[in-house]
Image (cartoon, rainbow, N blue to C red; front, side, top):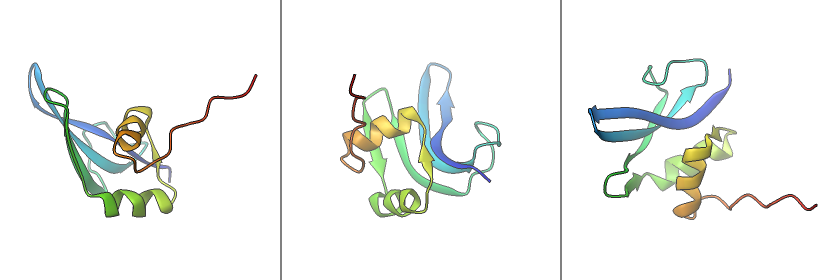
Length: 86
């Protein structure tokens, strides 16, 4: 089972609100998730994360999506990806 940390959309039309969840990668975007890690409101750039939960899941091998990775780097939970040397 491939488990990912990704966003699930909530909110009304034109006012999105997201939950940061741990979910099986084969489930639908808004499907049943394993664990709720935090919330993200892109309208006012507000991110609320349970840092201990996020670190625990990453230590267990959960792969964040690119968007979630960006949010985690911004909160200094993950290190930014290093550019490949050419």
